[in-house]
Image 1 (cartoon, rainbow, N blue to C red):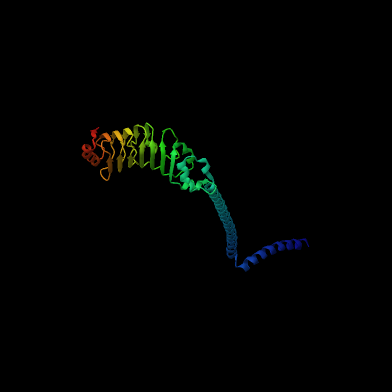
Image 2: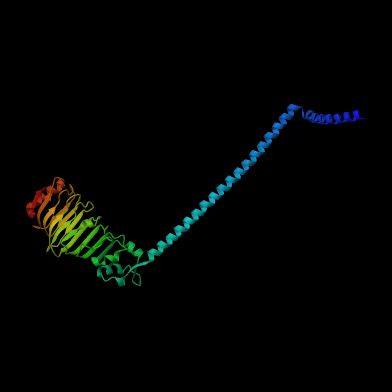
Length: 301
C-alpha cells in the first residue's frame, strides 16, 4: 500500500508537469510560447507608453489651456487698465485749469475768453489746444503753467529777465511790444526761430542770440531806442534781418547764409559790423556793398 501511495504521489507531480507540457505543446511549442511572451511584454509596454502619452497630452492640453487663460486674464487686466487711464485722461482734459476770474491780464483774458465755457472756465483740453498766447507782462506766466503747446508768444511789456519762463521756453515765435531791460538773452528760448521787437523804451546794452541755430528771423524796430551790441554770432543761420533802431555793434562772426537772405537797415542805424572767415561770404559781400549807403563800417575779426 505504501509503495502504491508513494507512486501515486510521484505520479501526481508528474501529472502537473505533463499539464504544463501539454499547454506548451498546444500553443505550438516552447519557441511559440517565448514569442507570445515577448509579444505580451511588448503589448504591455505599448499600452503603458500610450497611457503615458495620453497623460502627457492631457497635461500639455491643460497647460496650454492654463496659459491661454492666463493670457486672456492679462489681456483683460491690460484692457481695464487702459480704459481706466483713458477715463482719467478724459476727466483730466475736462478739468478746469484756469478761470477768467483769475485773469487780470487783459491781453490774456481776451485771448481765452472765446474758449472758456459759460461759467468762464478754461479746461485742460482748451489749454492743450492753445498755440498762440498774448500777455501784457510776465506777471501772467504762472497762469500758463498748464499751457504746454504754445508756439507763438506775445508780450506787451518785456520788463525783466528774472521771470521763470519754463512754461514758454519752447516757443518758436516771440513778439515783444515794449522792451525795457538792459540785457535781453534770447538764448533762454532754446527753440526760437523768429523774434520781433516793436519798441525799445530804454537802451539795451546787449541783445544776445549767440549760437542760436534755430533762429532765422530777427526784426527790431524801436526807432527811439538803441542797442549797444546785437550778438548774432556763431551758428546763426539768418534768413531775415531787419533793424530799425540804433545798433552800435552788430556781431555776425560765423553767422549767415550764402544766399537767400533778406537784410534791411534803416539809414545810419548801424555803427559797425563784425565778421570773420566763417561768416557767409555772400552776406559779407552784400553788406560791404551796402556799407557806404547806410553809413556803417565793417571790421574783420
